[in-house]
Length: 471
Image 1 (cartoon, rainbow, N blue to C red):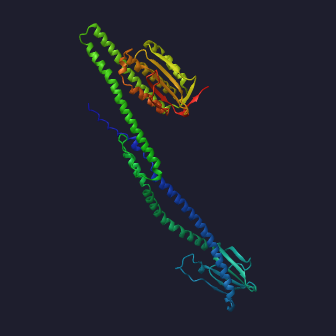
Image 2 (spheres, rainbow, N blue to C red):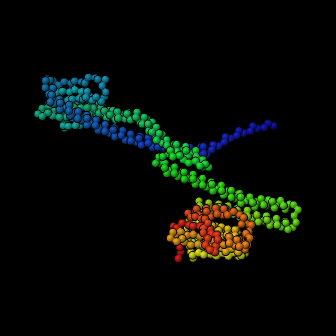
């Protein structure tokens, strides 16, 4: 039994990015420029052709009338005893539009007797109106343009004729003479226009190359050599974005370091206590190790909750729309939620706020900021601390503010209670969340001056245009 040959592997599909061809601005400008040039050129050709036909008509009609007047005044046929037919001599070296040699002349006397006939035109009728006319003559039905006129004494009548085909050929020749330079000039202009566009867009190519070479992780910025007025806003915007990117990366690195520091201690302690549980421990030491593991697990969970809060703040900044939020109602709800925890610690928590303080913002983020401030006050102060949640409107500026004040530092100095183990945690991560919420709302967060009897105060200010105090 023979083995069937393995099927040939199918070629790898092309990358979608590689298969998509980007549109070129240079090609777009060149096509539009050449299209406009071709449209203008075609319009001039059409106008030139119509003008050539019109001028050929006027030129031939004027020439017919001039020849008729000249021959009437010369009276060249008076010396002739009989009518003479003088055919035009062949002139193959002349162009077809040299219509001076193609004119036909017919003269009659007053009685209609033929006096003179020259040219290739068939003999027209003696009777007819004076002036210009188009008549069909001969067996082939050719159309001739004619001009007829009597002399002053009305003793002789003359008719000068020109075949209409020659006049049309003259008009076409004039139009062709106008088109031919354009046919030669259009490729030259296209080439020159393409070179001019390429040379004019060189600053744009340089800017694109510099942007493509930028490294967001470095402190590199676009050089000032792109000093074109059209590029000022683009260069400024790109540099601003790079500055924001750099600042965000610095914040993220600092945040990552803080998170690593926050998690390293409880995780190391958990690992150490878990290792100790495997050894010979008495009941008291074993219970102490288990309690320490639980405490460190709660500390690690708290850090993870802070990280989730940061993620929610970033998502709200990108996707959620600001709406009117009553921060007084939020503060009352938050204080009510933490009242039990404060009572269990022997703390006092109070609220000082107007009946209603409405600001445009994100309700989820503002509530998260309030909860974070209250949690920090409960976690990082000794038992028996007085905590005050205060809201109001800044004097004059009209901006809203909310702050948390406590007397935890005085309590520690008096020795009224020992700080909990969680007090050793850094507050930087929680403060980073509050700063992120403040930035999203266009405000500011930081430590503020504490008024007696309080010793510590953290305040969140919102911009003045965002405040509506409900009655």
